[in-house]
Length: 449
Ligand code: ADP
Image 1: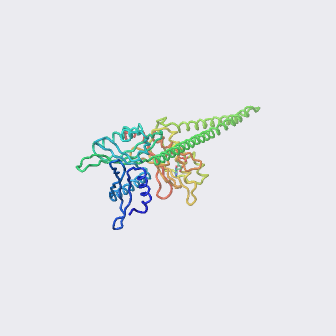
Image 2 (image 1 turned 45 degrees about the horizontal axis):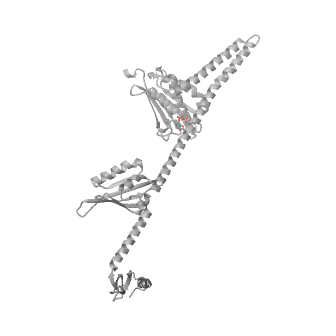
């Protein structure tokens, strides 16, 4: 009646018991009368006669089938749980509130790299492995959740036995007994180290990228400063070269015999004019980089615009651009720095000329207007029918440019000049073509008007 699979093992055990005299004990399957095999436990007892001779065995055979099936199921479920914990890198724990002892799953012990001899039933072991910077926070959270009997979630770094850093995300909840009293906490802790390392790497990589971008834009600015220096040198060099040439000419006319005083005088006058021009360039550049208003004198804005128009006239004609000026005669004076205001109008006019330059399907037009604003202000509008603006705010940002040879400083400087004059500067897109830049400046004695 012994199951054929168990028979060789049973025979061997039986023979060994007979040979050694050791009491037999084993588990095997036996066939019942209905043909079904069930598990039984066999245990033998020796019986000695009065001369202490082993004369017989008494055996007890107990049906353990149901227990064995339950044990197998339990073992399978435990294996399954362990497998899942390993795969998901999640360890389990249970904290007994009465004893203060903790039970942990092998996966949790693996994550914390528990060594033989570590007192892993003491929560202090796990706390001691938490990174010193995270310890206080985790301890306080855990204590508060136990006290208030609420769920708990915490993430922290752990320092493993080998000194490496791990990252854990732990959660737990209170478990009541049948009487409804919270007797324990059970929880899970997930090993997020790989995820954390990947996220840290990603953050480090994007930080490097940001640093590189900053360096690049700084390099671009340095390059722009280089360009600026080159163009200043160019601007100053021209009148200087002219001063030298006229100086030579003057010396030549004077060395003639007899000296040609009239020609020498002309050359000397040209020298003076060129010298003044060079001085003016330097003055403009200095004014450009000055943040505050250097001078506060009454300035006729119409005069300023007329100066600028004279300056750009030749350029506009060459580029076949019609420039229209509508300057109201009785506009009150504004209080400010004449050179800076010239710089302001000139920048806006030059930008307008650049904007209409590429236009081919309509006459190129730039219009400049002055008028008395509704408050105590003078308003100047520079309107063009050029390529127009995508973003009327962005254009004022320093180094914003869409021109291949642009610097993107013009409008930023304009904005600081207007701000220094307590004024307003803005740009709008026109309904049909192009853009209008306008600024408003407070008039002289504006407060009393
Ligand atoms: P930049 O030297 O590049 O011209 P600005 O500060 O003067 O520097 O202008 C910045 C940018 O604003 C220009 O590159 C151009 O794209 C835009 N912009 C300025 N004025 C106009 C305008 N009237 N129409 C269209 N775009 C303009």
